[in-house]
Image 1 (tube, rainbow, N blue to C red):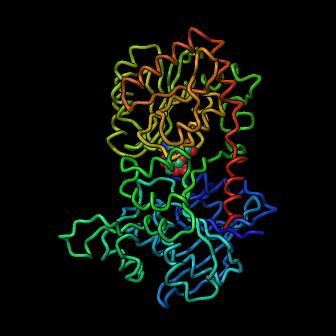
Image 2: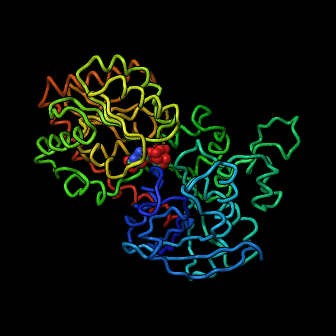
Image 3: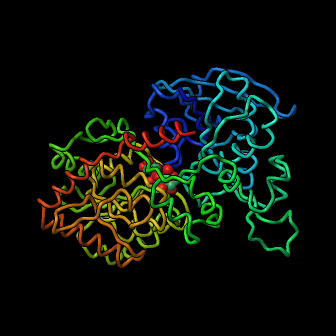
Length: 485
Ligand code: ADP
Ligand code: GLC
């Protein structure tokens, strides 16, 4: 029986800002319990839901390095043991993340606290599975300052990259100071890229926590096969292609799965009418009416409706949406948007909602429940991302029979099969070139098909709903990896 510890900065149902939380919340539940005992350790944020905070039991507390408080609290939910690292100074506040400068120190503390706590919690993992930059110092600490202690020897590590855009990067001097890591970690090729402005003093060179996680872990994984290839190239690696190419024999792409206990139109309590493969046509229309009502759009179950649920950042291809809005609004379509993020895109969508009332409806904010209604009520779903490591929204859309319109990149390419009108195959629409023109062309094709070729459209919705993007296959691949270590 393998003992596995997930280390991450967010996890459903405790705290979520994006897909990382969905994955950390659902993968442990879907791993074969006969083969492994998987537990999860997270920061104990003050902003975590009260319902869970009140169930926490204290396990231990101590002073790390004789000076910084670490409390470990625990709770068991749906058969999974969760540990929480408690320190008010670091994890209070209304949000899980602050500015990068403070976050670097908060998550360096978190990584070290996780390892420092292990001898006290009664669970010695065989494998530590670290997720994204916030957990990336765990393999670094483990293989340096913790190696002197026999307790830690032999623990294997996996570093999963959910998004290479975020790396936890600052200068050498600062990262050294906040992490207390030895000088060997800051040699070029380790936390420090060999390609630097050598006219600068060494302390001002860039150092990157995620690079450390990649160098010091036994295996590196990412969340789709295409993204695993893409990040070995300069265009997609954000400066880490040298190290990923070097580690390519130990780099694996495993596509994310979905938790169908949460995302299933047959049982979803947040939608207006439940449906499945048999009654989806009428079921989706009921949900579309509820969606239109909720967003103040004229109720018309036959109106072709596009949905978009997203963090509003450059990654998500919103510049392409900006480029097509005026042309798109000349067509007979509605667009419903739920998102929050960069002010630039929030204002852009506010502007279009004001310009096209009754056709464009926008809610700026984060609303889990409402997102379910959009997945169920829209006909097609936009994911035009410039890059997308995996993407979960297109997987959710497929399950709800809402056809994704995606840029052929990363996980979007691996999960959405483009419509082929001659072979009557496909589960959505995709475009290869990152351009507004191609996005508009795909949307127009989709809306034409919806209006003029109803049976084709319905057959495609049925195929989309029949796809299996649960964890079944991917959790088996993770299990194989764990067993190989
Ligand atoms: P990323 O992690 O890059 O944001 P993913 O597609 O992997 O992208 O995951 C996004 C997750 O966050 C999905 O579960 C999606 O439904 C959810 N989500 C994104 N924005 C919002 C929002 N404004 N309100 C509710 N849920 C959202
Ligand atoms: C990241 C990526 C997204 C992926 C998610 C979960 O946030 O942007 O593509 O689905 O992590 O792995």
